[in-house]
Image 1 (cartoon, one colour):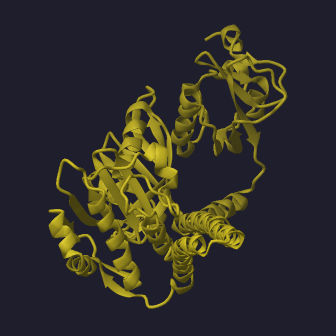
Image 2 (cartoon, helix red, strand yellow):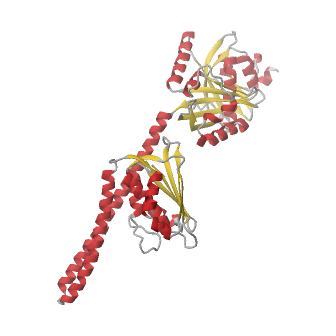
Image 3 (spheres, one colour):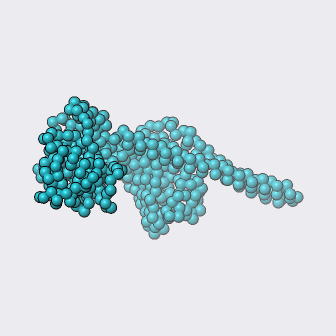
Length: 483
């Protein structure tokens, strides 16, 4: 190739060593060529020449991966590389993108900058040692998948993170079992997209050690290309972030608990200020009205009204007292409680209601049955939801109520109880945000008070649990309780 043709791909008069990538063409700055001591006529300014004649072979494949990911997916990178100079010696450079330097880039182009590193051999050894130490301290291990040889490679830190022996040889077949069952589809999608379309990934995902212990990890991966720009593998890292992730989850859970407690406090304050004031105002008005009457018989008639108001006042105070009791006694008398035994006990106590309404109750507690709980709360929760399911049955069919447990894999395998029915359902768009409010009712049953679900929610959340509802009008309702 003549010097005049080569010079078309050289950026003249630049004091900065860099490449400019534009329209699938690679332009090298004169400063980069001069830095290595070459004459323009002795080299070709393209990627293949650089990979085959200038960059050290141990840096070649990683640089190529970085290059293709920058061009195809705009993924920036930083890499230490060794480059062969005109004297036949290797100089170390720091190769970086995403820099804000004084260069005139064409619109739509990308740049790779090269900064010469002034490190002695013993400094390089020391830096490699620090790199390995940093990887160990941060629990960051590397991995590589070779599509051509159908093999997988781990470094020692990856083996340590996953609890495998130092001489363990990984296989591609075992890849799926490295991830928790509930996250296997996420991992499969990420690796498939990376292998087929070259899409890099960066995930926070549940992985599984050789001991079957689940832990949170950060999985980063990107494709590996050959000289024909074909994807021949993937490389990346695993980092153990379980401790940090669990703190994040606990912090979020604590925030939700505080928000829930604030909501209950606001609701409680509203009931105290509004409902009690209404009762006291009614009593005051009735007393004033009695004082204004002269007829003894009329005064006696108003005494019945006073009785009704005082009964209502007493009921409200009783409900408020129950809420206060829940908050003050939530840590008392906890013991291992069987959900199945409690359900059987509740069914026995309301057997006549079940029989009269021809209700069918099914249960499946194979996933989990025992929880550390306040027995009275468990009985109250099941009783409230079960009687509600019967009370709000669909007029065209007999009630069927199902109890089923599962485990929360993301939260220390805590027991989740799901209670579903085929009743009239609830319009969640209209009433979803008011469902657990005190004295909130959504059907026209004469005996509906609107205190049961409010008490149930307070009992569950007082013990750091959570209750959610999914319902559809005329189809039924599902209550999900995370203990």
